[in-house]
Amino acid sequence: MTLVLVLVLLSVPSTPDSVAVHLNALKTSTDAQELQWAVYHLALSGDSSAVPAIRRFLADTARYLEPDADSLPSPQGTAAFYLGELGDTAAAQVLKNWLVMEGHEKTRVEAAASLVKLGQPLAGLPVLERFVLDDSTPPKNRTRGVNVFFLPGGEPLGFQDSTEHSRVASMLRRVAERGEPYLRAKALEWLVAQREIDLGEAFGIATRVMDSTRNEAARSSAFRVVMALGTEQARQRIEEATYDWQPDVRFMANRYLATPGQEEERGGQ
Image 1: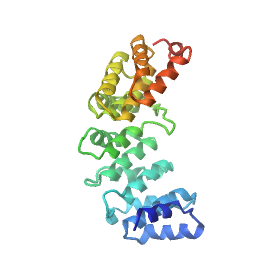
Image 2: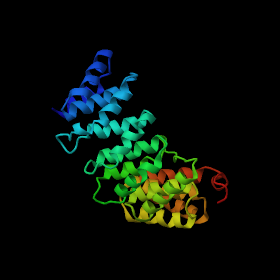
Image 3: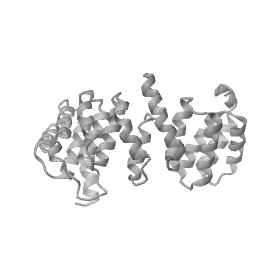
C-alpha cells in the first residue's frame, strides 16, 4: 500500500458507520496497519465507545502485532499514546502492564509517557529514563521520553506532589548531564523553569550544547535556556548570538535585546 493511500485513509473523517468498522477491527483484525488506522480514527472520532475499546485492545497482549515496516508505528504504541491523550485514567493498570513487556520498546515508551499524562509519573519514570539515556534507543523514543514533561505550548509540566516533582527533577538532571544534545537542552529548559538547577551550571551546559552541535532544534532549545537565566553572563552570550549562524537563534537574540525590562521580568535572578 502506497504512502499516498495511507495518508488519504488517515485524513478521512470518521462517520458512525466507519466507527463501527474500526471497532470491529480492534476485535478481529490481524493486520497491523488496519489496527493502526482503527486506533487513530477511533481516538479522533469523539465516539463514547472509543476509549474503552482502545483500552481493551491494548489489554489483549496475546494479539500483539508488529507492523510490516520498521518505519510504521505499532498499533499498540498508538493505542498507549491515545489513552494518555484522551485522559483515560481507567487505563492506568493496562499501561503499567506494558511497562514490563520486554521487546516492545515503542509501546513501553508510550505507556510510560501516558502514565505521566494521567498523573502517575512515578510508575513510568524508570522506563523513560532507561530509554532516554540509552544511545541504542531510536531517537524518536528518546525525544518522546523528555518531551512528555512539556505541555503542547512548550510550558514545562508541573507536579504538585513533592515526591513526583523531586523524582522527575532527578531524572532530568541526569539527562542534562549526559544525554544527547537536544535532550540535554530540553531537560535544562524544565530544570531552569522549575528552579531545580544552579544557574551557573545551567549556563555552562547550555553553552556547551550550542558550541558542540549543528542540530538546530538542540541549539534553539539551549538558547532558550540562556535567555531564561537573566544573568549578566547570559546577556553577554545573547549579544554574541546576534551574529549566530542559525537564523532562529539570531532572531531570538535580537528580539530579547529589543524588549525592555528582560532582567526585571526574570526576577533579577
